[in-house]
Length: 83
Length: 214
Image (cartoon, rainbow over all chains, first blue to last red; front, side):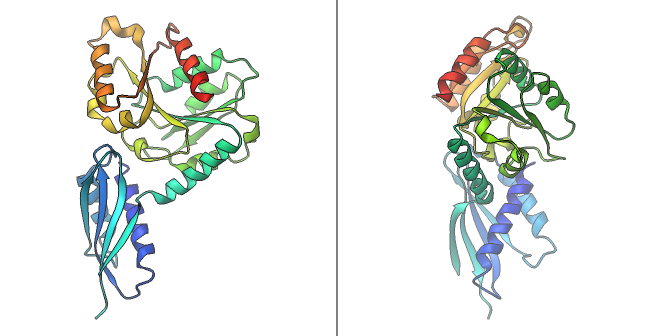
C-alpha cells in the first residue's frame, strides 16, 4: 500500500505550489500515471481523499491521467482565487 | 487559474536518490536493488553470493524488512558489512532510508553494494534508491505469469533471476513461458537461472555481476 505515501507526496507538492498564491484554494490536482508505474489509480484516489478529508483543502479533486511506461508525474493544479 | 506543476510526484525521493547515485559514482560503487515477492530467495541468493566471495571483496549489504533483523543476522555470518533496515510497516525502501542506513560507513572501502528490498513486487518499483540497476528475483514456486501480473518491476529490471530451479520437476512452472512473458514486458532483460540449494547457475550470476560492474 505505497499509494498512501504517494498521495502524501502529491499533497506536499500542492502545498509548495500554493505558496505564491495566498488565500487561493486548490480545486483539483492532476497526476499522470504510467501503466508500468505500479500505482493503482483507484487506491491512490482513495488514499488522497482520506488525507484531504477534514483539512483546509477539502473538497479537492484528484484527476488521474493515463501516461506511457513508468511515468509518475504531476500535471497541473487548478486554483480558485480569493474573490 | 491553472498552475502547471511539471515535476515528478516522488521528486523528494528522487532528489535523495540522485545524491546517493552521485556518492556511489564518486566512490566507484556498483549498487544493485534486489526486488521480489516474499520468499523468492533474495536472502538465500545473497548468502550464496557472499559465501563465494574472497574475504578481500569490498562488498556490503543493506537488507530491508518490515520487522526483525533475521536477514541481517543470516548475512552477517559471511564477515562482510551488513545492516538491517526495518521499515516498521512500510512496504518498500525509499531513498532516505538507504541514506540513513549508510551513515557511518566508509564508502571509499566499498566496490559493491547489494540493497535487498522489502519482499513486494509492487511498491518498491516506484522508489529509486540511487542504484545502478534493479534485479528482480522470481522463483519457480510462484507462477510463470508473474511478469504479466506485475509488469512494472519486470519493465524496470535489467536482470531476472529465476530462482529455485532445482524444484522445477515438482512444480507446474513453465520456464520458457516465464521467460517469454518477461521479455514481452522488457525485451532487453537478462535472464539467469539459479538454485541456491545446488548452486546451479551461481557462476552465471557472479559473472554477470562482474560484467555489469565493469
